[in-house]
Image 1 (cartoon, one colour):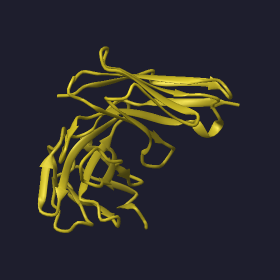
Image 2 (image 1 turned 60 degrees about the vertical axis):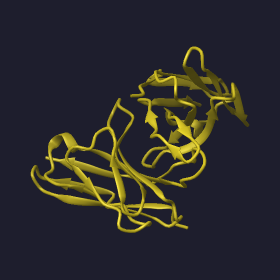
Image 3 (image 1 turned 180 degrees about the vertical axis):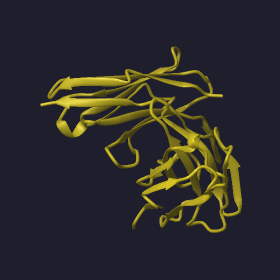
Length: 115
Length: 114
């Protein structure tokens, strides 16, 4: 089955700096890679996702890049703000028309943005 | 819409007791799933359902049962609680269709088994 590794487990940055979280996956059939943000005491919430036919996707201050050859993808947050402090999870799955295999999650990264 | 709701928020059980964690969604989502979250291990899939009357096992199904009699509800049953089942449990739902869709998570149930 799929195995997703996520690094680092904790990350502290100064407000305004950038943060990068990296994930690798093992199953070459995986073609969908979402990122979830979990605030304290809440359930995870999707913030951005990327499909394998795209190398990069941006949404305001966040971006995700995908390298299919190396089987890794990364989350980039620019101009970090205190409200970005949370646990971030990467995930991977494979899907085809009419069906979807399950998401496999990474172990999570605790991001702390220092004022 | 309330989205995905879970009850209770907190629960303490003694070893060997049984209980049911409730999950409901009001978005008419066909796909529902249960995850457990443990420190350093991310979210692991316990059971999932692609529609009423259909359930299947995930990565860590042992010790848990599910059923899906309606589209809205997907309860998770612990048959005989063990300390290893101490965890935070999340229910999620999504549309089932032609591609991958966002999974909406509930607020979680924190379970402690003593």
